[in-house]
Structures are given as structure tokens and as C-alpha cells.
Image 1 (cartoon, one colour):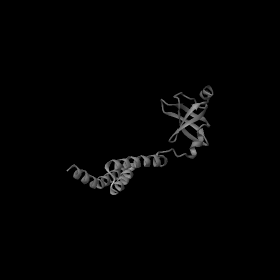
Image 2 (cartoon, rainbow, N blue to C red):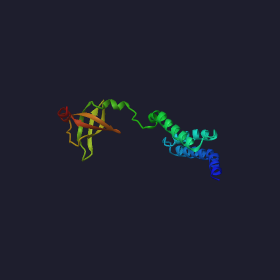
Image 3 (cartoon, rainbow, N blue to C red):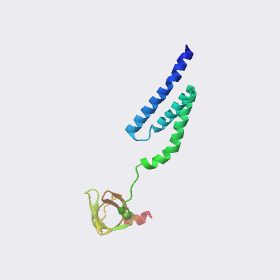
Image 4 (cartoon, one colour):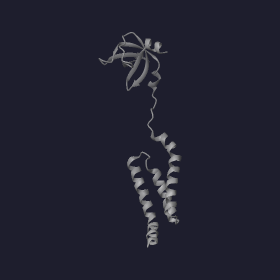
Length: 159
């Protein structure tokens, strides 16, 4: 009796593994985050193991080993394409350069402008300091079309 149950289960494992492939592929298609494609590949390998008559322990071993191998081999490659990365723009060349303050920079009143690279930019103080018009500042960061700057006096103290 137990032998019949085990034999039936092993015969149906192909369908179980195909269901795991389908579910893993559906989850991957829904998320597009490379979270379950590894399991789909492992389950596909387990389908072949079941088809060749391997016992349940061998099928599970194949599933685990192929899933881990697929993860180890493809994850570093996929990470380069999936991870968001900052695309440099021509404006990035302003970072670290000097600018002249045209309008007092005061984060509390949300005012300030600097002249850099032949253009007038909205500016804010990177450290919250009020910077008077006429001062020279260093551009430390960009947020959209706004430059975050630090006064040259603060730069020479930090250096």
C-alpha cells in the first residue's frame, strides 16, 4: 500500500514541479524583480530528474542545487541591469567648482542665487549657513535645478 502511494506520488511529481515552474514564472512576471526566476530554473531541472525516474530526495537536491547555481551565476550580472544608477549629466561638471553668490542664500526664507558656468542658478546652503551676496562658494551637490553650496570660508576650514 505504502509502495503504491510513493509510486503514485513520484509519478505525479512531474506535475508538481511543472506547477512550481509556472508559479515561479508567474511571480517573476508580476514583480520583474528577479526574486523567483531561480526557483523556476531549479524546478525545471527537477522536472527532468522526475522524468528520468529519480527519487524525491534526488529531485529536491537537483531543485536546490540548480536554483542556487542559477542565483550565484546570474545575480551579479543581473544586478548591473536592474539596480538604478545615476546617469551623469553635463551639469555634473559644476560639482566642486566655485560660484559667485548673486542673492543672499538663506534656507529659512528659501532664497538664494549663484552665478556658475555662465548661468544663474537657484542655490541653497548645504550646511544651513546664511551666505551673503558677493561671497564665493563651492558647489557641493545638485538637486534637480538647485545647487547646494558651501561658503569658501567653510571649505578652507574643513580642508
